[in-house]
Amino acid sequence: MRQVLEALTDAARRSARVVFTSLVETRGSTPQKAGAAMLVFPDGSQVGTLGGGCVEAEVKRKALALPPGGAAELLTFQLDSDYGWDDGLICGGRMRMLVDPVAAGPGSGFYQAYADHLAAGRGCTEAVALDLPDVPAGARWLFDDEDRLFAQTLPGDVPEAVVDGLRPLRGRPRPYVAGGVSYLTTLPRCRLIIVGGGHVGQKTAALAADVDFDVWVIDDRAEYCSEERFPRAAQRIAGPIEEVLRPLETSDADFGIIVTRGHNHDEEALLHLARKPFRYLGMIGSKRKIRMIFEDLEQAGVPRSTLERVHAPLGYDIGSQTVPEIAVSIVAELIAVRNRSEPSSPVRSMKDAVAGR
Image (cartoon, rainbow, N blue to C red; front, side, top):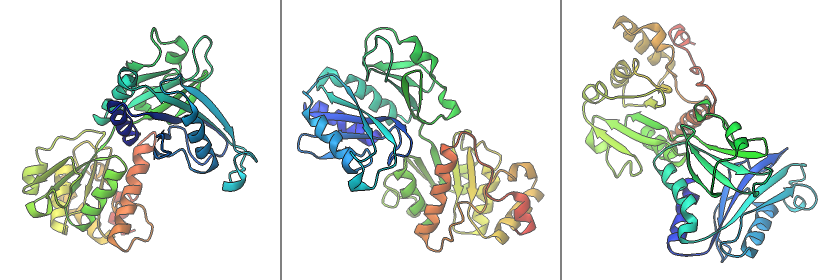
């Protein structure tokens, strides 16, 4: 969504014609889930996708037929013989699309507020009127991660039904429909602290940035923590592990992974991070190495209960062999933890590590 909104606000500043489309409701089996968005330009080019195929092509055709700056509309597509034969989508699902021919200048203020909010890493909920009495279909309201209204397309008070259906983002709800309103949720962007700027850290950072983590990289070697190696990192911090990690402030929304170049550095990093708050804290390594590190840290006074929350070895077991495969396994687990309602338990517990399992 962030990429789509950036392209939209850029087009609006240039007074270029653009149509915003969004998948606001799905039922049954569909090729894309609610929240997907796409911009359509007069030449037929696009940014984003609604799932491809005949449905996307039909949305583009109808979007370009709307007058510039006209009212937003809702389109409904049933994935049957009308839209499914060519793409194998005859699955009975239904997709409901919002199509909005954006007006340049003041008319794009809603989207500018939306874009600025997401660019700051904040979470929000977009409420879209589907079937509300006396409210035009496609009217929208934006609520921040504290449930406060910060932008709307319909002047006046927010309808009571919209407020009644709003769920707190801290519960990490997925997009949902309630009381004739579609609620499209965007969770706050999470910080990922990567300790170790080697090959695994570099590849993991690139993939994590692709899926909207704010990446911080820490390494005791300046040459391994450079802008050249990590061009998309929000922060690059070079310095001795103890000096950097001991004062580092974290929160229970942060993710952290330890992927340094050796046993001693991993152990030192975990010593300083294990007691800090994290939503996810993981460490790379063999079962033997992890068992030895955990035993050393217990002897150093780190409680067993603290070590039990460490994901080690980190990442999903997909039989990884190469550095890119290892990075995929790590980022897949990070996404799974981020998108769940509750933090997952470590893939392997400290008890299992100590037992050598």
